[in-house]
Length: 304
Image (cartoon, rainbow, N blue to C red; front, side, top):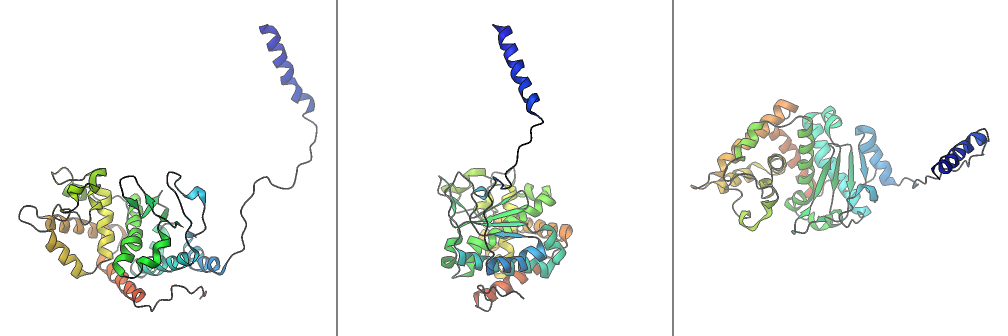
């Protein structure tokens, strides 16, 4: 029986050899179908303001392979995507151009943005505002809520703009890691990092006194560093002074830890990238005031 099977398989193996010289005509039409679309005025504006000067792709059309299949995803509304593209350009890209130079922005700023209409909700009630992937891409979520949260600068920063600076900080850290001294300020102490328990009720009220700039900064040293950077450049000096005052207590002097951390962040940005963080903050806040005053046209698709 074994001999018969081997013989039969050998005979089958010889079959292609007898037909290898036969020529088949190939269908000129590819079996791979790529979605085709005619470029809109918005696409042309993105080419002029993102692609050509910075080689940045700003994706606003829904793409299933860009989403996390563990969550329900919703496309971003077109009109909101136009506004967000203006905000990212004017508040973020142009700010870094102004302070650090266009070469810095072209070198380090993420090469892809992808917009999603909804947040990513977790089982514990936390939802994700945005993510950075591979040091090259930022996913911005909740775009369909943009009109609701553009009413104040604080809301705009909390839900969108701070997220961009936070995720960009992660990208910069992947290029050049921050000093170990930052991790040592809170790491290893009784008031240290909490990992996924940062959202627990018992840590909701005293994060400032524990030396963390936001509740989420308690997660880990990397999130702490990114939160320090993002919060600092999106708030003025008076806000920072008030924060330090609120963080002080006789039992836990969180203000000292916050001051130490921010000193390390400033030194990192200066020594590694030649950026004075106060200058960057001034540029961002000036542009933010202009946006909130309505002097910036966030709907125009005119190509200059």
